[in-house]
Image 1: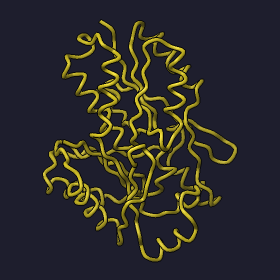
Image 2 (image 1 turned 120 degrees about the horizontal axis):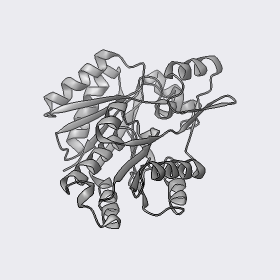
Image 3 (image 1 turned 90 degrees about the vertical axis):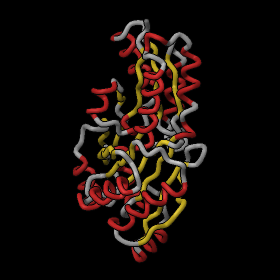
Length: 288
């Protein structure tokens, strides 16, 4: 029997309890503020917001480089002799993590990299589907075709939908992802864009919501259920610090009203917060 390890980067925002329960192993990405760079998770989110308030610049996230992955895989194989590693990388359309992990994997035997083509709550949904697939096969002890399993893992991508809605375009504007004119228009009209990945994992603004987040979040969940044939087992909800409990409660109430059995909430780490900004919310769903 060969042990199978499921790994990902911190941009997937897999919570600690899920790492402990399902054995997911997370490689930290990086965040830079000024001339200092930190591992994701090493700095409180409030410090990111304080840095932006003080300087007008958003903290910058960065992918793990090839050497980061080489060190990561080396350590895992040393601690788990004979293991097979499947790394579920943040969408290649928004990050170089996938590219770097593929290059690093060439230095090893039995290391596979999967492009999730998703981010945040979508990555969590993806990992859970991969875990369920592995368990349905009887677990690691029943796997002999590791190439075949990698292909089955990769085939999960079209079954996962992820998206997010920023409460404000401040961070996206500061990071150069929207123009100043678009930011001003959005602020005046209270527009909140729906951001989704396309088939290649690139982020696109596909819809505009107007009004306070307490109303937007309800329409957001309803729209996802109307547009997609969603499995109603679990709604994965991510949020950036600064969101009100009232909004989170409204999201859960809406999900249960629409037939979801449960909601799994997860607060975003520094990498995703660098892009979504304060009080952003996002969803991950599994499709039938």
